[in-house]
View (tube, rainbow, N blue to C red):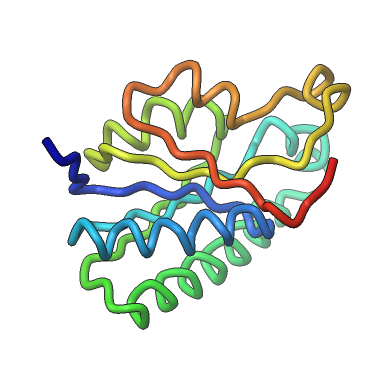
Length: 150
């Protein structure tokens, strides 16, 4: 029995690892003739203190994220995909990507770029990939940068 996917979700944050995940997601979507959802979550937890001083930061981050998402959407369309959608959310990236966004989009596969965090950094701030791996109900592919050394 061959596994095929219908809706592929890729989480992006502008990092090199996320761009590698996008690249792979485009290829997987093409192979499966699937819909591609490109999602970005603006982490509002990190903005509470800053936002108290400058509410315009939310607008700036949203505009930058929209620009990034549209650029990625155009790459996917130029690669030959037909159905490419973008999702921009505000909140906790871990829970939104593990639960809400897959449910809302009907995704059956998610691709994530592996973080470059070392063990100590993961203890301090946690790994989104690790949380999503433990809590999501859909298949997950973590894309690693083979050139990166830890």
